[in-house]
Each structure stands twice: as structure tokens, then as C-alpha cells.
Length: 446
Image (cartoon, rainbow, N blue to C red; front, side):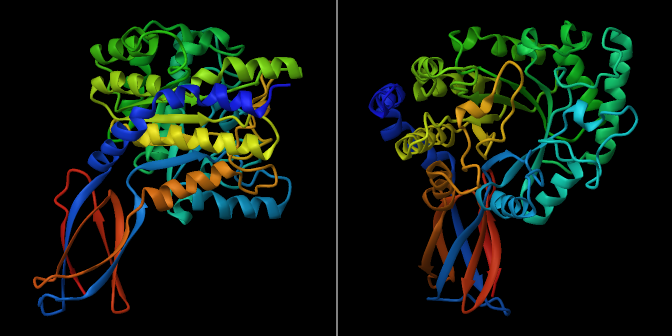
């Protein structure tokens, strides 16, 4: 059986080799691109400056989005577990991916499951249930996704291209009528480069212009929303960045007029998802270690940033390579480094973890993601070390909290992470923001 010492040697090798990035590039990038200078002027109701006053500044929300999928909302076996999940999710994330897989959204033709009171389907909570939760907790909701030809209903005319185009248009129109302008973003098409491995799909997958068609159709009904393209395995295949099929696919689609607003890149390290024996699992641990490679990640992100579009790490899995506390410690260490890569890459504006609770991941006859132990929480929903590390990064390390004294003009100047803030003085609190590409000079009346 592979030892924890061998695991650490294998999995930290690429991270250790990227030491210069962590000591220089990422800290400099974070300071330069994730923070801005702010000037806060405090005055009384008559407009007179409040001089020499101690002010408490607290960041209340990040502009940078860090989220996870919300697939287990109200999906556990007991009311107590469901309540705990509801109370936990928003404390760790400010964004949630909401499932719109067509086969579960409309299992019966003409009867979509939009409403919060829809019949329950495992790992597929109704969209309204999710969006209502997000609104209540003050987090953003994103749609996943409009065209994913792997998860489609059996009742569709899968071999008739014209009929499928008509069905997809009706499907997207109905979603847009209900959710346009209400979600953070819409993933338009997902994993089109993986269709060779799908057991369920339609002729739509084989369309020569499937990307351009999907974006044109989505833009027709979502003219003002953020539309995202999403793909898997981009960081792990051995292509050079500019020759990667996903890079070339995007280049072609943009050249033909596809209105892509954002590029999504998955980062699942699915170690052991195909393993059936201990030997197969150990072999997977050894052969997937190079996927925790900060230098390759950074290089791919820099190449994709040349399209001039924001980037999103849309689906993240960091495996726990065993059942011991030492394995959990290693997962947390890898997670901390990889999130530093993404937060330290100025072209990235969103990172979404995937399966947050161990034991509730996707599985089929071919794969079992639960083997990866990729959750941030144990099956009883208690946090693993990785969850605590992630929370600390965004609530402490990368969050601004300070106390200062106003000058003779009532001003307090500071540099802080982009986001929403509160200023407290003499028992009163006012809110303001520090945002990229804005003049962050605010006057607050207290």
C-alpha cells in the first residue's frame, strides 16, 4: 500500500518546483490585481469633516467569486442533515452552481421541474429551490448548463437534427423566460470535446458548428446575460497551450462570431474514480500526481487569457488520497496551493469547487467519483481540514479588516481587496464598495 510519505513526495513535487511563483509572481499579482486604493471621507449631517475619528473597516463580501455546486440542497436523508447543509454552504461560498441538466429538469415532456415544490431527484434539486436559497443567503447562482448533450431526456427525437434544434430552442427559450437577468451567468455548452465517451447523446453533438449554433441560440434569448463556454481536462492533456483542442475550438468559434463572454476550464483531479482494487487505486495515486502542477496551470491560464475574456475555474476536485488525518492534511495543502494559483492569476475571476460532501458525488457504471474522496466535508457534514483552509483564505488571508484614524479632512486612505465594505464609527455603520475600474473615493455621512 502506498505510504503517506510517498504520496507527499509525488504530489508536492510539482508544487515545490514552482516555488518562485509562490514567492514572487502570485503575491505580486494578488497585491496588484486583487486590491485597490480607496479614500474614505467621513462627514457629519452638515457636511463637516469628522476629524481624528477611529474607524473600523470590514470587508463584507468579495468581488472574486468562489463557489461550489449546490446539488445536494435538501437532498440528504434527514431533516437535520438538510438543515446543516443549508446553514453551512453560504458560510463557505459566495456562489452556487445550479443544475439545469435537461433529463432531470424535464423527465416528462412538457412538464419541466422549475418549481421549488417539484418532485425530488437525487443531486438535481429544482432550480427555483436553489435560486430561492441563494437569494435568501445573499450568494449568486449560476446555471449549468443549456447544451449538454450527455444528459438529455429519452423522449427527444435524438436522430433528427432539425427536430432536435427545434427542441433545444424551445428548451432554452423557456429557461430564458424564467431566469434571464436573474442569474450570475449561464453556461451555454459543456464538455463538447468529451462527446466521444458519452453513451447518451443526439445528432446535435456532431454538428460542425455546434459551438457557434449554441451561442447564437442562447444569445437570441439571453441578449444581456453572461454566456460561458465550459470544458474539461484542459490542464492535464499534453498539448502545448496554443495547440490544445479547446484553445483552437474557442479561436474558431470567436472567429465565426460566437459571442462568448467567459471561458470556463474544469480542474477535476479524479484520482481513483475508475479503480476497483487497492492496487488500481495506488496506481492512480501515482499516475495523477502531476496534475497538481502550478506552473502548467499558470501557463495555460496565460495562454487562454490572450482571448481577452475572463476565465473561470468551473469545476474543481482535489482528492483526499486515503482515509487518514495525514491524507486530509495533504488534501488541504494541495488545495491551498492550487487556490493560490487561481487567485494569483489576474485573468481568473471565479473558482467553483464541485462535490463538497464526501459520499454524494456522481457515479455510473463506468466511474465513481466518490472514490476520489474529493469533498471538503466528511459524510456527516463536519468540515475537513481543506474546508477550513478554504474558509481561512477568503475570510482572513485575502480579506481586508483594519482600523484607522481620519485626518483633518475626515479622510481615511487604505488599500483593500475588491469587494463590499462596512465602515463603523461611534456605534453607526455605513456600507460602501471598493471595486476594480472604479474611482474608489467615497464620502460617507455619519
